[in-house]
Length: 310
Image 1: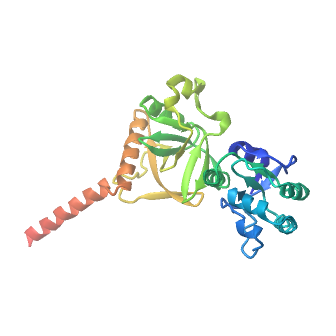
Image 2: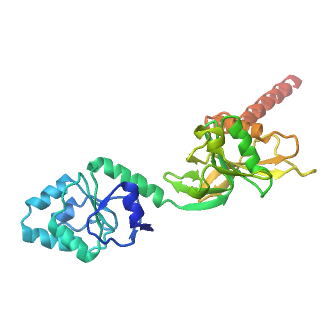
Image 3: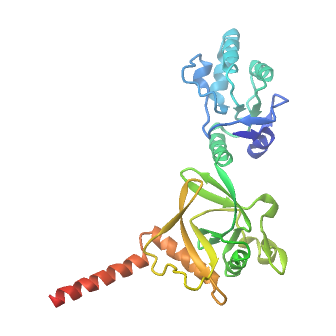
């Protein structure tokens, strides 16, 4: 995947040392490499596709190595199409490394962070930046610490339901457009695009800023998606789920997420229904299913009745 080198440096607070980095970096995974072994001349298992992170060990070895030997190894090092080199602790870059990197057009960055701290930051950044993602027309809210993705046709009342939830003390993540990405291990994270963050469209009123009206505590920048609720207009004669014994799932980016299809009609308080759905989903995750509990009681009673008749 191609990532803007400018964004890469900005997000990780890096100083670019070579002067003219390529516009984009090609990064294929969230793994990193510490090139201690390659610098000693061992190339059999060189993970050159990853960002190369250099700490005190690698830099000390380079300073203690005979100049001609080091130059040959650096030439070999940069003969691979490595995406970038990052030097930690604000250590000065070895002149030979800088010269060859410029010639090969490989960006070299510096950070003041200790090596271990920076590696954790880099892996976290790459996990997010390289995660598969889609954009979906929906509303995402945090209800009792459960992320509910509200879907449905335009005009069905998704935003109004979210607004009522915000009034009841819950938090808005995104309205109308939700950016969804899959991060390891198979977790879906939703957030609002930068342009529309904290904004909501209410028909008849227009655009409102939830954070300004209800306070910064009423919004959240991102949230895991734990449940999908699909709103649809009530259809007379259509059979709707009444017990909840059979759980339905929908697939987003290859991840199965529980889904509820909730019919709405005038007078039905959708916000309360969504609160109950969030609490009930949390109970299911903790091993309690009310529908199955009732089913078990009915079966037990029928079994006792059959035994008495015998």
